[in-house]
Image (cartoon, rainbow, N blue to C red; front, side):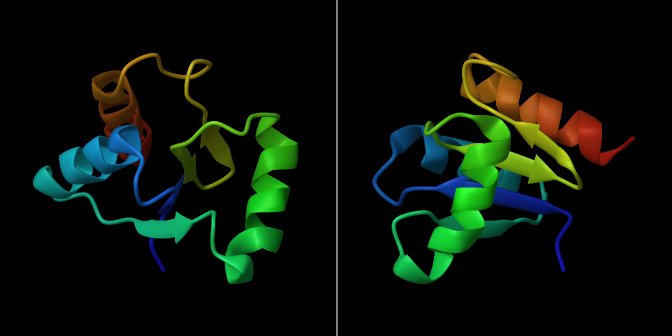
Length: 87
């Protein structure tokens, strides 16, 4: 199982930019489409913990990276994800 989970929406340009950046850098992740009914319970837990309905939310172990809280640009999100992954 991947250490990184990304909670995203397929049509979200920020989500896609984050995933493309991580893929380009060889970072593996599990993508969870928060709009699918089968993912609702998992996303509800993340929503409760993050107190944010913005995506993409990145989960690394027990750490959540939330847009406009943990990072303000997608490049910051990618760099922070890689940094935490290597710790």
